[in-house]
Image 1: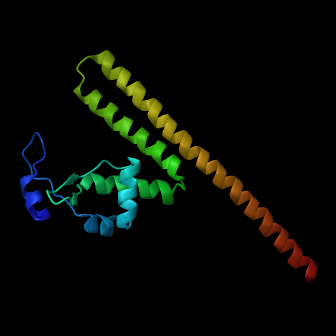
Image 2 (image 1 turned 135 degrees about the vertical axis):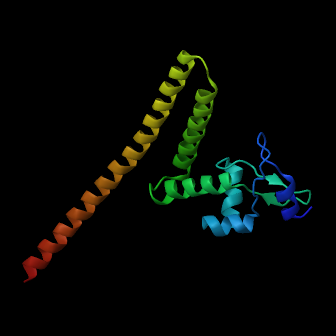
Image 3 (image 1 turned 60 degrees about the vertical axis):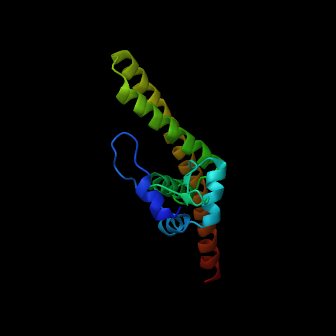
Length: 158
């Protein structure tokens, strides 16, 4: 089965809409990651395993691409280590599940419970970011001190 045939035959559950699928080459181009890195992130569980054609070709969704972009931001913008990314993504996943449970709940106490749970997960994500920011501030202070010593050394030589 060719990838474009799989795209035409895979329908999103529930509403009958066609969901576009992407081969790993396309995902690599859109995300800026190598194919090897994408497969590695899949192996680690950072992204869910994509569907495959009968021939074994991976077929990714827009959700996979968006998740990879979140991972890239956590890595590049926040400077998270691989373990921190795994923890951050796990919290994101739990938050999404909690949101789904909230939307499906009819009982007001259950809705309240899900909102409290979501708030706690968001607080944990904020703590992770704040911790990283604090480390960055400390590093910046060290660099500022180094800059100050260099400037003082130059002034002494004049």
